[in-house]
Length: 514
Image 1 (cartoon, rainbow, N blue to C red):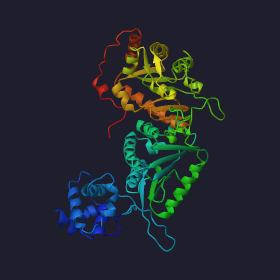
Image 2 (image 1 turned 135 degrees about the vertical axis):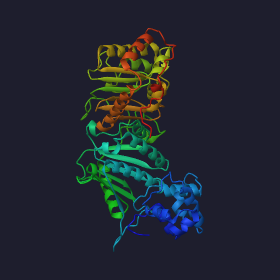
Image 3 (image 1 turned 90 degrees about the vertical axis):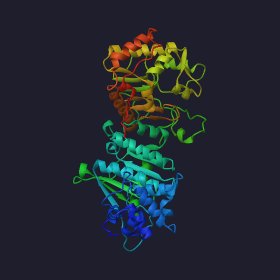
């Protein structure tokens, strides 16, 4: 094979079997010129290539001595048969220095040695490199850790919501193999430089698939991103005015560059604060069920040293009114005879005196209506906090809705949306957020939760709800429909009427299709 070509997956297999393009072409009934183009990468194999199964069967027939067993072993992890595993191997992205066996590269101590690296340019190249990293993990032994040193520029990493969907889908696959992903960033960036606004990215944090750490200090000189898979792989992204979008990405599998990346990531991890923002809803006192959730403990109070009280616009996405709307007196009523958990004052509304900043509150239409027809309704986040079933009386819910209605009628910057349950469920999480200040979020089943008072994570929640709010305009008008509906329900009218949704609302989704 001409060594000027980077070896394709097909070329690796052919070399192991010692077969030529002519021999393979005869074996599978395909012209040897086409096989040669596939071999050298001048015509890539894709999932649309109808000949892939033919190639896979022919290669397996030629493997009379088991030369491909180690190569295909990572592709049998889900019990796939040989042909399926071979097709998966042939169609996997070509990764620099991807070993035939999933072994860490041996360090070189003397003499000359050849290293392989791959260069990608621009933001598109960066996103492709991130997906290649996850593909590479599928070929490695399970239980790897990926550390990404991401210096404030989350827009390069996750500014594209379609890319986020692709990344999270692949991430779920590697997580099943024991992979962990730690993202390290410098504390204190503005909203414009924060993490993804996509629901799946936030949900992945809540599931524990991604952990974010923050440090105080200076950026590494020259490097904008560093990603490390210890002992196997490293990627660097630097700003380069001669490259597309001024971004130049290099992927390595040679030992010396791998080691350099590991050392830099380890240095900044050591400077980072513990991942203490997790574990709010399931109060950690006395619990050993899931220790990884209990690092953070209850929410901190304000004021506290070197911390600012939450300020800024208030956004909420909840089934029924909850934090930020409920008063301290109402919370005490819900707690009943139980000693109320230590919660900071900023989580509660001060009667009718809502803060002057803009408010946007998204509620679940069916949950609100049904709660107004019952004597009391269970609140999932409050039940999780109290570790028992906690109920909100109907008159308390009505009082909260009246406060919201009065504020929305009096202020243009105070808005409420009632989202159909079918659409609400697609959002995957609930949250309250003060812009650029503090956030509390939880999965809709209450199983995981997160509290954050760093600008990056708070900005993610704020940005996600802002993106979601923009999507509402495509399906229904907020004040024109929501406020009259709330007035009618609070007057006891129309609570047994099922609203009809337009086709836009029925098919509405906050996230685009891939």
